[in-house]
Length: 116
Image (cartoon, rainbow, N blue to C red; front, side):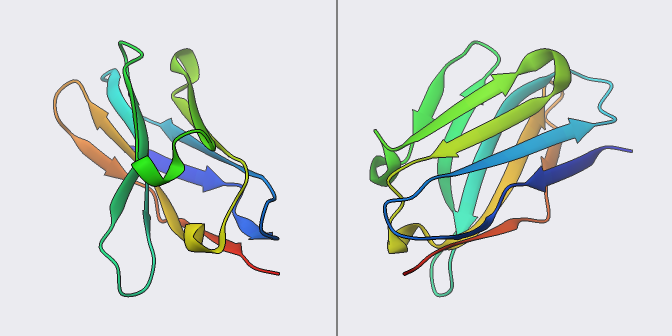
């Protein structure tokens, strides 16, 4: 059974930094995409950042230059370094992975709150 475990959320002041980490265990098929999504009350879930096995990356326009996604392919880990955080970044951040057989896996989410 595939499990997705996230860590690293919390409360931070505007301008601060947080690092989210996610590990996917139990997959017998390589993971093609690993990504972070977020959702805040009243808003649709949106892609924050993603990285494929080919190292292709994609970022939401609102986080470009502030957030950095990294993967450790051998361990099925994806991290999201978030710098210069803004109150608008407040949301539940969820880890997502897609295997090379198009199976989708989601984490339960971790709360990030940016507030003074």
